Image (cartoon, rainbow, N blue to C red):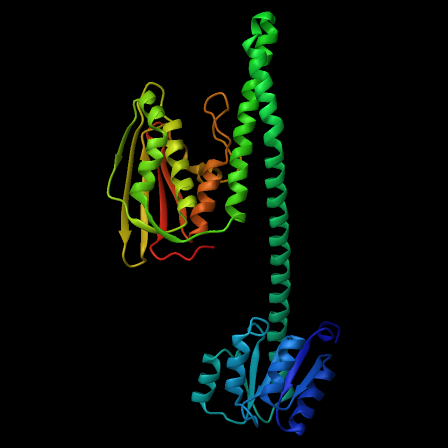
Length: 371
C-alpha cells in the first residue's frame, strides 16, 4: 500500500455502481480516488487535481469518452496523464480509435480486479516517473539559467577593470626604458595575460548571450555573410598569404547574428591553425540532401589538423588541444559554433588528418524552428 498512497486515480463513469466497484478495488490497493460522472467534470477535475491516471468510461451523458480524451490532450496540464478506457464495448475498431486519440489501454467491463490493478500500477508509475523527470529537468534548466546569468554578469563586470589594467600597463610599457630588464619582462607578461583574459571575457559573453538573447528567424544569404567575414579579415588574410575559395552557398532560414558568429569562428580557426611556412588554403562549399531537407556546409583547410579521437572534446568550452604559446585562443570558439548550430536544430562535426588539414561540416535544415 505504501507505494500507492501518493498515487491519485480519477474514475469517470456516469453510473455510481461502476464508480463504487472501481473505487473499492483501487482504495483497497492504497490509491487515492477522485470521481466524475460526466465529461465536463472530468476535464475540470483533471485540470485542477492533475491525477496520475484516468479511468474513463466511453459512454457519458454529455460527451463521449473519446471527446473527453481528445480534450485532455489539448491542455498542457493534462495531456501527459495516461487514460485507460473502461467500456463494455469489446469491438476492436473502437479500441483502435481510442488508442489513436491518445489512450494508453482498454479494460473491458465487467472489470476484474486482477486485470485492473496491474495496469493501473504500470501506467500510474510511468506517469510519476515522467513528472519526477520533468521536475528534475526544470531544476536543471533553472540552474543553467542562473549559471548563465552569473557568467554573463561576471564577464561584463570584468571588462572595465581589465581595460584599466591594459591601459595602465600600456602606459608603463611606453616608459619601460626606465625599468630594469626583468621588470620589463614582467610587464610584457602582464600585458599579454591581460590581453588573453580580455579575449576570454569577450568570448564568454558571446557564449552566454547566445542562450539568453532573442532569436530572430529570417532569410540569410550565406554567401553574403561569408563575404562580410572575409572583408573583416582582409588584412589578416593578406598577411598570411591565404587563399580562400568560395563555391555556391545556399540561402538559409535562421538568425543572421548566430549564423555569422558560427562561420566567423570556423573561418578564424582555419586561418589561425595553419602550418608553419605554409599559406592557408580555405574552401567553403555546400551540398543539399533533398530527402532530409538539410544543407551541408563544409569549411575545409590545409592546416595542422587534429587527431579525430579528440572530436568530442573540441566542441566543449575551454578545451584546447594546443598550448597557449603555440596558438592564441580561449577554447570557447567551437563551443559557440556548436551552440549556434544546435539553436538552429542542426549539428556540427569535423574530419581531420593531422598535418594535412581539417574539414568542419555544418548541417542545417532548410526549414528551421529556432530553439
